[in-house]
Image (cartoon, rainbow, N blue to C red):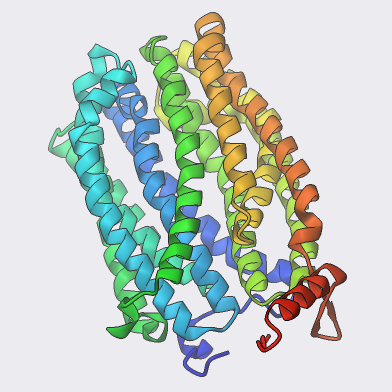
Length: 484
């Protein structure tokens, strides 16, 4: 590794050496706690609004949740894609290209922030009308989502800094900042809603301020402690090759996220035609699903970082071995959380919302039971998809997301109008199963092409397909020497 990477000062984790599962778990645990605190943002908004403003406030927050997810996930998807490039450069120990990749990441994020903020605020009300947001909660819902969109720069900046930290194996530090901001968010929720009587707009303002604090703290930490991976003046003259690679990975990841979220917007549009009680039940179930899904998502994300670093280092046997064990962990958590939700789902809903409406509780529990019955499929889906993305194989994950979009379109057109909230509840479980079957087929179809290197005695040895490729390259350019 480049001498400028000082592990004792920078707190990096080189995942190309050591026990794969220990490395993945050591990376995943802080990431999991951090993601839980991120979920606390929305959970606290729902709880404080529900306990102090009533069921309509929950519906107002939930009615635009998929729209907000579409906007934010576009930015988050881009950053996740950029981070794949940074992770691979770190795994390859190429510090010059690592700094140049970070520079390109910053440049692209500046453009994304400006464009997304302006467009979201301009088209917000038409989008809400398109989503059939009920008139009874329209103004409350608008006041919430408008504040969130205006402050999305905070979420984008935090995701960028956290992505840089994750790329070099540090998932712990950003956790501390999230804990601080989450506690701050809870306090400001109570202050803005209970004391200042600002309604759901107060909940949104509390979230934006808390996100700003976490972004600023994370940015300061990265600047002070990771100067050697941060770009200097010349590094911002990013080559077209690196910009193209960053954009390619970022666009692929964002497209995958946005296709999913576009389906969710159309899906919620159909769900919004039911009534405020159903919207509240859907919001409550989504909050609980979001919390319980975090172990699945964080293990998959940690595996992605492991795969990215080892892919850059050409250590493919480590990737294959780790992926099998990760799938086992995903299934184990999915089964445990399913048992928990089947036993205590009603109590979770009442605690989350503060509601005593039996219609909200019963519908939310129905939704939870259907989703958690298929949680093992979701866990395997997340692990396979992120691993393939980390290896630069973008097409299959995008197609799987298109399958999700298609299923949600079909549900919005046929299932929900005929089956009501039951149609809403069964759509995602069926979709997860179809996506997983497709990804399994795609993974095994391209597996031999993915893993073209074998390792013997710590040395990298090419397999026959790779040797044949090299022979063709030598014939085409006999005077060229390729250094490996």
